[in-house]
Image (cartoon, rainbow over all chains, first blue to last red):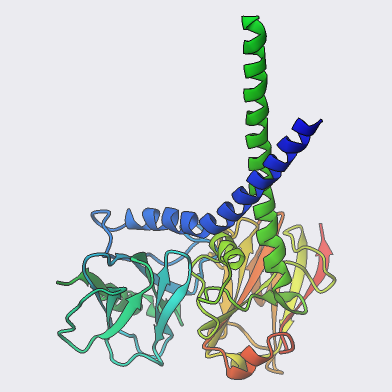
Length: 178
Length: 202
């Protein structure tokens, strides 16, 4: 009888540990899985390169609940060794934003068409405690995790403007700097 | 004698295996239920719509982060966007393709620099349809003479603002408000939001 009580207690304790571990690991697991899929869409399947996603349709199934009214570009970053330089032109008369996410899903920085300090927007993303040299007028942003994602959003106000907006979208880039 | 001790060892191993399997089932199952329960508890409700205060935020707890990863990965902080979700009508019944609905609202322009209402299937992805129509925004919705709007949610064509719902057991609506006005952030549970009314079912 005592053995059964011991087994039940061990089962419950183990279940509690698995419960906490599952909740804690879930955001990292799902984000890493999604980032791996997105990274494969760049020409060489590399990080720190921008991917201009085509307009969203019912076939877009990389990320849940995509907005069909936005043009998305994606840069999966890794700033463990070098800073990342991001430059993105801001289109006129529409909503535009560049948002930075850590590996745990936190949206740690956003700049939009109203708050950008320059056009094109110019950001230097650095790892925590990383020495860096800001040669230009880039705004410096510190990433709380070495790996994460930057999402660029452009609102398609009118389908007739789609080609023009896609041209602006294509001019954005992200690349590691020394 | 030897076979008796082997039997004991096998019994012991089986017992520990059972402990691990049951603990896994309990741990993972309760984690998923817990994520759902705790995030539901922390939601702010406004009629049929609900929103989370900490989606995408650095203040989010581990249960909220897990929920965001499952249903709202790469959500923006609420200073940038307010996301309202609805999966029931004004009578509290789940939205589904076998029924037609009417979404009636006042002009939401005072609340945000731009807004949209998008329909998703139960899998959280857009519903395929011949029209490739998944949403309306304040840039393309047709208003009536009073400045209000009506969107018809239906699997069959409707005149006016029509969002096709295909063949889904569950429908999810998302209202996005970009660059929300400060008054929205302070009154998430009381601002005037569109109402979703069931019309008829198959």
